Image (cartoon, rainbow, N blue to C red; front, side, top):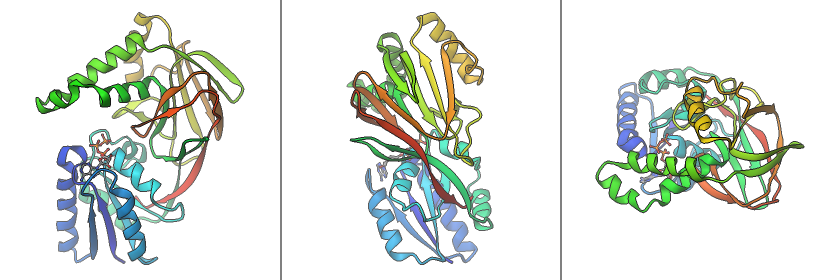
Length: 299
Ligand SMILES: Nc1ncnc2c1ncn2[C@@H]1O[C@H](COP(=O)(O)OP(=O)(O)OP(=O)(O)O)[C@@H](O)[C@H]1O
């Protein structure tokens, strides 16, 4: 049994390289055969996964090393019947938190993978006229998508990143969106929310680097958790933030939490959506269906 490793050395500001070095040194020491496929540029994951699938036999295993973006791209390139393992090396690592794998100990994570048996997890599957795929983290419409979009587009970002102030650009755009983002209407499984501010679907609890948005969500079952927050007065929204951080927000009167195994929804205005941190656009009145897809993991 060989290991085929797809690694993003740039994940976590270079942590991907450190994790890969640590793992490959250990595999060499343990006399375990591996084949390393490093990404060399953004969106290399699909090409590398295709190469891996062409070379591996049924006895071989796949390990993905990287952050939330890497795991999302890699899983989208992997047919649903192929098992995979994951060693986190990103900054946010929400999927790893959801899977409950160690964020620190690469060797312990590998040892667990090496002796594990296949388990089924459920990831989000989304389909609309213009968007389709699976999401390993979350599918968000509105606030979170606008924040990611604004942070990516921020003219200041390049300069601020050079000055190592990227966090500041992110904070500034977040504040601007919280102050000015207009609400939208969404109808989901026959329920209408007239003034939606945040609308996120997830299969595991975490969002934005460990924020417990849907504390009871679990990758091991087919339940999808929807968390909707209304646009209400600004002081209330700011007061809600510490409640979200402490996972005490779901009882709030402007927060709605629905759990179902399938959602069908429609929005009344074009909105940015974020799918595992990548921004896309969802057109008004396009039907979006969210279900789950079974995947096999060794962890
Ligand atoms: N060699 C590379 N150089 C630059 N970007 C890369 C490279 N390989 C992959 N990428 C891109 O990096 C992004 C994924 O980064 P990833 O999300 O895994 O790390 P992160 O942002 O540090 O972690 P997290 O999302 O957990 O905070 C993807 O868009 C991917 O295509």
